[in-house]
Image (cartoon, rainbow, N blue to C red; front, side, top):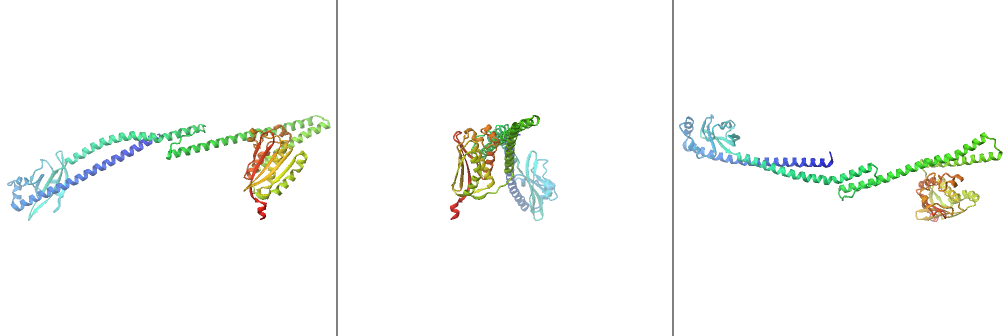
Length: 471
């Protein structure tokens, strides 16, 4: 059952039951109040009739009771002075006089009558509902039962009229109310239906689906939360899709990087094994095998480093920048001399937080990439900006095309694959460097126009200047 239908039936049933119960209580309350008034009026009539009977007992004596019992005295003269329907009975239950219709059961009330008390009972006399009041009238040693009857059928008729009118009002009210409730349920569930349709579209793969903001109430808040959730889901799906694509590229590139050197190694090994080659050709084949083996070794080490970085926690230590870069520059001196590259460092003294071995790996990878890009000059600078220390490695090599910068940090991605393979590159160095930068709470930032070199920046936490510490 749909939500709108549930709302319609629940609200209709609730108000219908409440209206019925309220009407029943109201009609019952009115009937009870009216009956209480009728009883009070009937008691007053009884008291009046009792006074008439007592007056006759005083003026006429007790003889008329015995005479009325044996039929020699007619009590009609006494009854003519009384109001409503009346009846008189002796103490042993013999009827002296009755103005009630023939067949009316008025004597059955006498057994419940007690001295100095008035009893009453509702009885049907013919097709009329009557209220009988009864009591004992005494004077000296004479006593008679007095029964007074009051027609209260009009109260029942009024109750029936109220029920009929209430039924008409109930039918009209429930009819109009049902239409209003149905319209209200449609209005309230319209937004829910919209949300349901949107969730179905998202479930079908349309993650860009959104709903219109419907206001500041709870439904509007739900719509806004839904849109935020949908945006988060879309972003997460895109992120997972990108991760899946990168993993596919990683596997494909890794397989390709293994296939090329292995094919060469197998080919040259097979040539050496099956053929008698001159010494020069043997050395050349062995060199190719050694060269490709070194490339695989480099690849395996870098893959191992990347795996280790994913599963270890590293402690950053406070290090003085001048001492750090003096050691790093000394480590790259041989490479710079061999390649004929000029390395200049301009380092502002400060204290930064680094993990020495990891930072050294990051630095060497950046220098190595600059050398592989054909740079003849590399400028390393370090500047303190408040609580941040920015290190920048700038070269005058071939640069990186603008459209390639977004992917340069992906594993196995190489801008110039042929040049990278000749230099034992596998496209993992910058991916490794990026992971190290993130361990240091930073990331690699590249700037290049693809022609006049590349600038790589990394921002580290700075603990203060050296001069500050000395003070």
